[in-house]
Length: 337
Image (cartoon, rainbow, N blue to C red; front, top):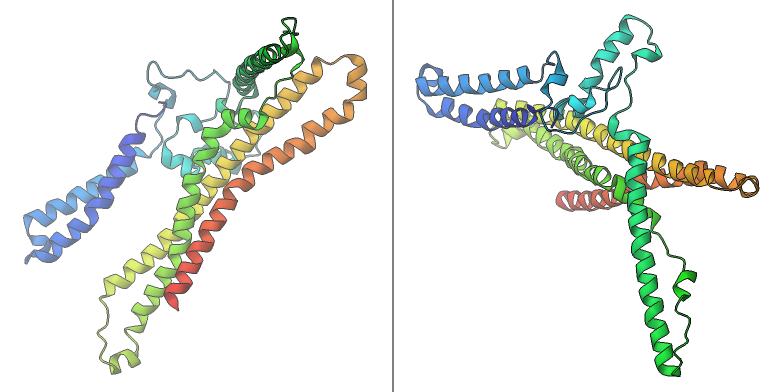
């Protein structure tokens, strides 16, 4: 685990959030308010938790030294990407790019200034994982084909009474390899995690109309017509709470949407790297004659077909999330009718 403070960050964030409302309740129910000891202690605890959370997010010098002994070793690079060493919140907000942006603000960036590729996106380790899965699937398919051929041959021999049945027919069976399943095995975990920010994006995106409706109801409680009907105006802090909630929902929806796009892009990049490497390795084993005859097919596989594979990772999450959005929209319309 490159960054051991990630769990502490979540702890201090949840501690701060869950202590806000009890602190407010203690201040309101205590007759002396902040003059009493317990509300003051609650308020100090909440402020201290928030300050601790902010301090934990400040970049620490020598971040490589935070790597735990026994964790996975990251290959040494001249200008490594800081992403593997950052915590959850810096990844969500992309704050790990701030040093590069500050450098670009001061002068024109050069190629040496750019970070190296994240070790998780290197093509050769991904190829080794995919090749191992392909070899395992091929061995399983050959074994199943041999068993099926042996069973069929034994059945024919039993029916015809002929013991000279060709037992080598299994060699003529070509095993079928599931390339889509193999690629998904390589990038599947990363690809599936994109569902979490997508769900959160949909939730925060569609909660805004509800908050706006409540905010309009709050403003309407102060209108002359409401006063004429004897409607009591709402407490001002309720309106400020709705306003803060609208701003927070907008910010969070943008953050989770950006994280969803980033995870999808990385998954598509891994899939592209795997397919291109497999096609390239296959083309190296072709003879000169076959390579000349199939050069157009090789180029087509490495360009057009790879783009279709990458498009799958971009679209699949949008399909199920679109269905969820339609259901939420219909439910909201039914609620208003």
